[in-house]
Image 1 (cartoon, helix red, strand yellow):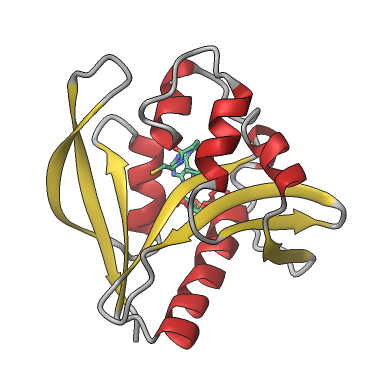
Image 2: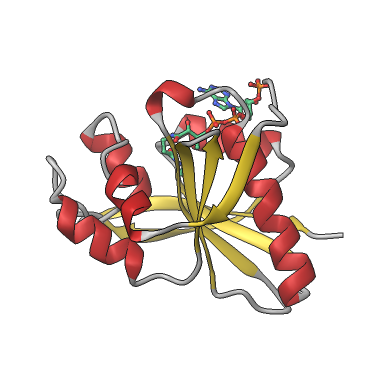
Length: 162
Ligand SMILES: CC(C)(COP(=O)(O)OP(=O)(O)OC[C@H]1O[C@@H](n2cnc3c(N)ncnc32)[C@H](O)[C@@H]1OP(=O)(O)O)[C@@H](O)C(=O)NCCC(=O)NCCS
C-alpha cells in the first residue's frame, strides 16, 4: 500500500456525489455501499440518499475525486463511518486508509469521540480485510434487510480512538 502525500481531503459537494454513485462495478459491490439499491443503480436516488446523510467527505488526487465516505451520528461515545467507496481504478493505493485516518481525526478532535465504528457485510471479504488491517475489530453482528427485503448478516467493526 502506498499512502501518497499528494492526497487531499475535503467535504463532498453535490458534483462529487454525481461521480461517486458511478463507482460500484457490480450489483454486489453496489449493495456493500447502498444495501437497498437496485441494479443497475438509479443515480438520482443514490445521490438523494447520500445527500440526506450528515458529513460526506472526499479524497482527491490532484483534481480527481478518488474516494468517498460519510461520518454520521458523531457522538462523544462513538462516531460512525458509512458509504465508504474508492474509484475502481484507484484501489489499493492507500486512498481509503487516508480517508479513514482523516475521519478518525475529525471524530476525535471535533466530537471527542472515544470510538469509531462501521457496518460491513459478512459477504464482503475485501471490506472486512480493509477494516481489520486498519485495526478495527468485530464487536458484534446483526441482520439487515437487503434490496429484496431478505435478511443479510452484517458485522459491526469498531476501533477505540486514543
Ligand atoms: C474496501 C475499499 C474501500 C478499500 O479501498 P482502498 O483504497 O483500495 O484500500 P487501501 O489501499 O487503503 O488498503 C488498505 C489495506 O486494506 C487491505 N485491502 C484493501 N484492498 C484489499 C483487497 N482487495 N484484498 C485484500 N486486502 C485488501 C490491505 O491490507 C491494504 O493494505 P496493503 O495494500 O498494504 O496490503 C475498496 O476496495 C472499495 O471501494 N470497495 C468497494 C466498496 C466497499 O466494499 N466498501 C466497504 C464497505 S464495508
